Image (cartoon, rainbow, N blue to C red):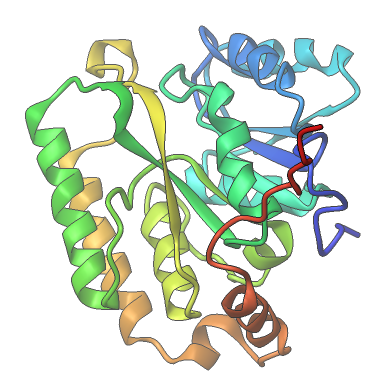
Amino acid sequence: MQSEEPATRTPEHVLGVIVPAYNEERSIERVVRRVLQEPSVQQVVVVDDCSSDGTLEAARRCTDDPRVLVKHHEVNRGKGAAVRTGLEAITAPLVIIQDADLEYDPSDYNKLVSPILRGRADVVYGIRGFAGQSAYSYWFVVGNRVVTTATNILFNCYIQDMETGYKLMRTSLMRRLHLRGDRFNIEPDITGRVLRLGYRIHEVPIHYYARGRDEGKKLTWRDGVRAVFALLAVRLSSRRRLFGADDAYHAQRLTALAAAPRLPELPPTQNAR
């Protein structure tokens, strides 16, 4: 059973990391080793999505650390299916998705975790382009802006990076999203469901180092088109169809978030003697 709340207000050992991987033999071990260096990490679940290279073997080399668990799909099912498989094994109170390439920097975990531990948010996205980034394609950036704009219009919100790979939230919340996306449509599926439930997405600038097609980039313009249709499907579906019977969890969490102070608490100052 996962903890419903982070056990402490400090970032140590509160985060479960899901690493979906498909043909990432060159980078998977380096990524997992780097993730394990972060003090916030309690566990890492690598899900090999039936890779045809040595990804599975490379991932299993990381199990010398007891925090690492490796899962394997016998057939290729897509990133979304790998995320759901990983989520089943998460016991940490918070969860994030970490791509198995070298585009996202785990050193950003601490600032992503912080708004949740301070009671300011239940969902935090790492947005690319402010803390420092590289981009391999102008049209890739434009496509991301298009699907993000579609999200803002459909759900009357304002976010800046719907497709970001860094989506961090309470594990108890992610389990209740009843995710259905199997492939890259997992990104709009997560975002649309979070927004349909009434949560505000807290965005934090992160570092991002884009790779190109020759380095294994898999996302294409077709995935952008699918993302828009996935957003429409979530927006037009009934709440009951998306989430099933209401268990009062979301009402309780939204009430708690609304009651949180708008400014962070500061430690009391000591009078100078």
